[in-house]
Image (cartoon, rainbow, N blue to C red; front, side, top):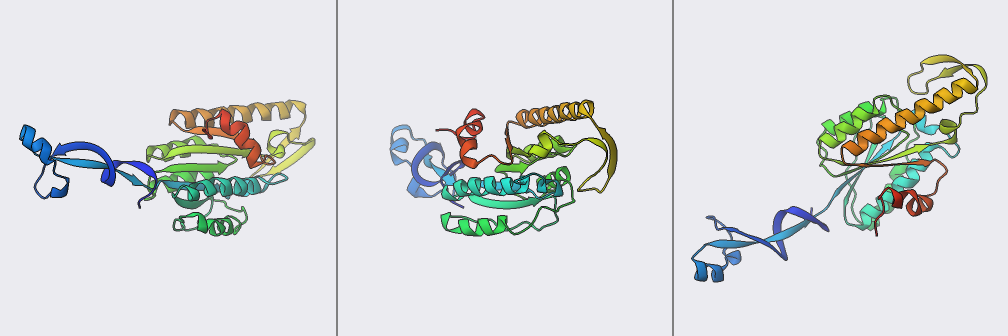
Length: 264
């Protein structure tokens, strides 16, 4: 649909783009008679076109997003509402996609007046998906979604997440990845002999939570984040990390500006 984004396609706006050779069937209203009179070269004028941008809000609804206080899911909804408000105000086509679930894709929404509908959709389902983040990303990339801006809001705690990011980029999406982590993820308060239960696969692992084990965990987390960042940047995208308690305003003033999510 028509929008405010400059398109590579030629259209019927008043902004002149270029000349091209006349072909049978071209609209004679765009035929340049002055050029033909001077050079005897039959050309038509082409014009710039504007179209809407497809903005895909990829909201991770995996069960791991329920952790934290406030939870990572609450933070993801808060940031999704902010990004969605910007997209709707710009006249773009906004698609809300639930990752980690088998929920069918919803039709796009457009225009500032539909913002309440976006808020209702964001607050409709709790984070309880068990489909796997990377698997959901690959499924989305393999679908027929129009290439555009893919804003991923997730904790990224999937060992195969880099493959999901590459799948998005391979379909022509520009990737913005907002990794949301809670204090539980960054500074786990654990001690003693424990059996940990995976909230998504129900798998278990037994550990002895001491200072050595916690340092090893944090080192592994930093290495995982570095691999994600490398995958996003290799495909020309942007990545930023926020804590679940961070406000949208603080992000826009600090990390958002530093990582070029926000430009004046």
